[in-house]
Every structure is written in structure tokens, then in C-alpha cells.
Length: 81
Image (tube, rainbow, N blue to C red; front, side, top):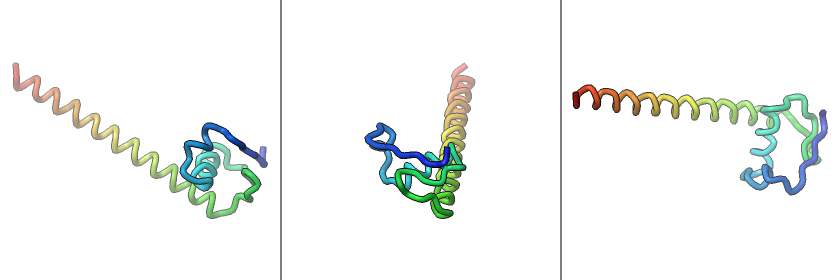
């Protein structure tokens, strides 16, 4: 699949702009040449890469925060005993 057209899709309504939606789609399908009548160029592909990096860093930060919270709970339980 190299050409995709989306109209009134729930995913489209959640995206803040067509560029963000295009970046989300390009993360999944890198062979796309046109999306919603917009030709996919190198800047769109770079946005997809940066979006992927941003989401990965966000997931890692959330995982670290959760691990730190669990470690603090365990330490508090050990001190209580």
C-alpha cells in the first residue's frame, strides 16, 4: 500500500494536525508515498522519526518513575517493619 486516503476517521479527529497524523501513520508504514492527497517527503519522514523518539523517551521516563515509586514504597515498608 503506497496511497492512503482518510476521511472522518476517529484517529484523524484525535490528531492535532495532519502532520502529526501523517507521522503516526509513517511510524507504522514507511513505504507510504501519499497520504490524504499529500505527497510524503523527507520532512514528513523525519517528523515520524522524531515522534517515535519522543514517544520512546516518554515511555522510558514513565517506567523509571514507576520503578522509583515502587522502590520508595518497598523502602517505606521495610522501615515500618
